[in-house]
Image (cartoon, rainbow, N blue to C red; front, side, top):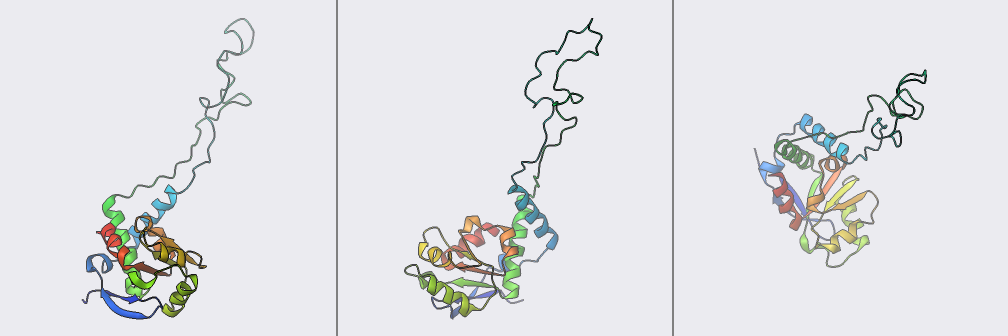
Length: 208
């Protein structure tokens, strides 16, 4: 099986050459169940988990007995925050928790699968480092149009590649991230993926 390749685009969006990609990263088997679990874990980690009710230990007040133990003719009570009291806590209170654990090996396998899917479908390209000397949204739009792939588009650039980031970040349907910010859920959501030459090695490093 031939090693996967991707076009290297210049500042006008035209293919300057073909680049051979790391087969262990971009030629990996796509395992949908691993990708699904990794995406669920990322989405759960981003949830605020603000839903919940208070147990009797979390409700304010009720520190002293409302009346003495004997002699009142009423049932004994130790606190006004018991579940059977109005304004009391909830019995067996449910607290929100959306944590989904995916181990490192599975997460990297899912990351490779998401990258390989783009390489297989021809929706992955590399942007030459010298394509943008200064920010230009007009030139970035020309690159996207010349490449001819669908949006949403993920553009991955290094932190110091401000010209590339500033050029693409104002385009509709385009999301710019650094190599450390690339998420599996974003790769699955995106219709196409564009990575700068400088960021490509870092992205491959995360997947290996």
